Image (tube, rainbow, N blue to C red; front, side, top):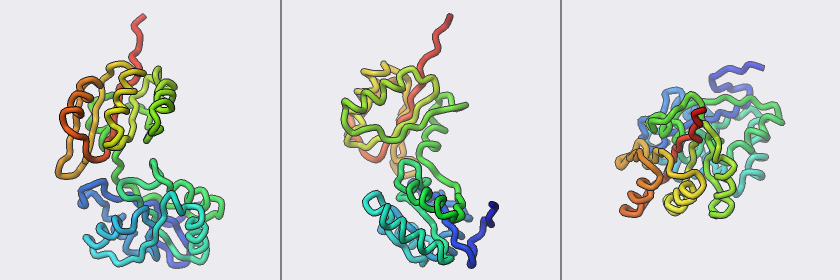
Length: 237
């Protein structure tokens, strides 16, 4: 079934709207038009989203949709969509459903045969990958691994011989431990580590894992990190 890419007044549509990962200018005209036209915006953190809406003078009502309430709230959102209301789903930053609870709402809407339309835009993993300087003809996005070192090492071990470039997310509280596990499991590979992309203190480090660890140990880590790691080296026969 093909649906119009414009907000419909007669049929409820779920719009997956990408929002800036930092710089508020990184939002598309189509995203702004959609956020203004829908009946409701379902946001991971309504306080965060309201700052974006206020910046662009958008008065659309918001409601929370996050990991803790996604099942019950999802049912309520689907009910509204069935009545003909259109809803925009946004995350705190970037593209919803990527390392984000939004995929559950998508599954509920697919089950209910509700139209779903993507409004593409920023994504931290793509932004970081684009400046990493590593091969990107194909890559593997793994998002956040386990916060527990033992399980994280097992997850990394499963990826040790993956030849494609690998992309991960990590918090400032675990980035050094994460890289320590990467060094132990993968060895001293080439990495690119991006933080605060599109923001005032944007930084991209390129070098070996050991060099990255040394740098982070000298300067307390701040901001969310995207880590791009070279794939398993091909052996020369």
